[in-house]
Picture 1 (cartoon, rainbow, N blue to C red):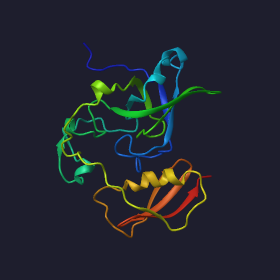
Picture 2 (spheres, rainbow, N blue to C red):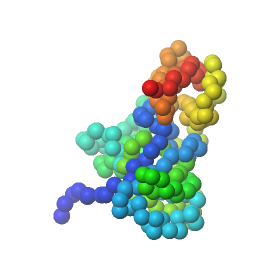
Picture 3 (cartoon, rainbow, N blue to C red):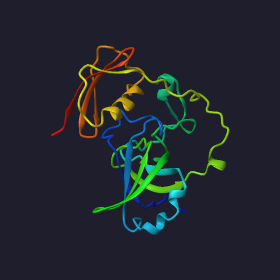
Picture 4 (cartoon, rainbow, N blue to C red):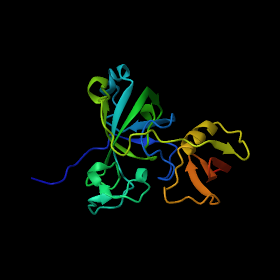
Length: 221
């Protein structure tokens, strides 16, 4: 019996998160629309009949940019400041024996485009281009349990976002949502450092002390 599985890719996520830095560390922390472009033969509308009855969905996906193949029994969760080690199975670290992720997202709609069938959702925490391996409905009576969450009990605190020069761009509120979660690694606390983050077609520069100060945004050519 083989110790490995072969899993089909049913689609790919399209999101404004172009790099790991800046992606929310958990799903449903930002209300930003993303969509899954379904691959044949999974782009058959009959496969989604009844999905509109569910408000939320489970996405199973592949950590396709994780190049680490060696098993790590312990990791340093960002939630603990990156200073304390925990067992890999007690965390949601990307460095897993099987690089499979699991996220709950909010279902918005199905769309037919010239490229095929799209599943539009909000709340995803997936890098642009992430392969999707399965989609399942979220069932409240069994999935929403009264649970203990260990070291991740409290909702992340959000910082105020202040624009040094307020831009006239359509995605201003989306950028604010993402940055309010403070995407910096826990060990980086220099208030004078200028950070850069790619979001959609924009490069965003910001610094952090008691608030997030956005220094500017530049559109990529």
